[in-house]
Image 1: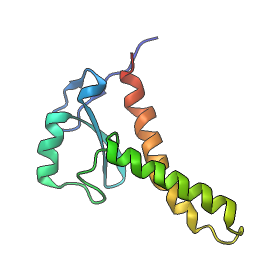
Image 2: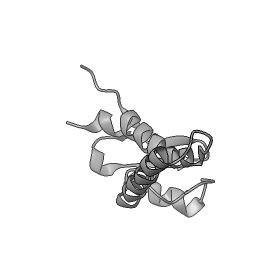
Image 3: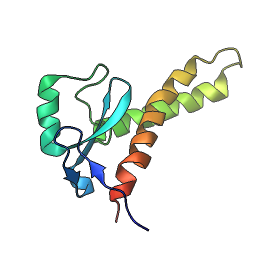
Image 4: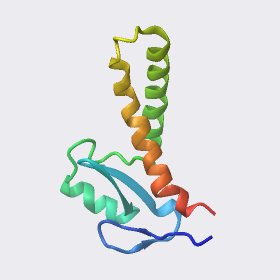
Length: 108
């Protein structure tokens, strides 16, 4: 099976491995950067929501785990009319989208 290439949004270069990949949420879509290009990007502060937090970083993984816990608790202990816990599903869906769109392509 042929792997599709991951292209850096900043320099349009090919990202070769998972260690050099940084994904970021830019206004309403997820983009991929080289690690060096991401440092240049965050100096511009282009993003609207969380412009300097990589989606495939440790901090976002921890926040996704916490959001998953809150979503599960909300699902178990709320009535069907109280769907406020669905807001906690947003970071989970963004993280899954980042993984399946970019990171999975670079796995060996």
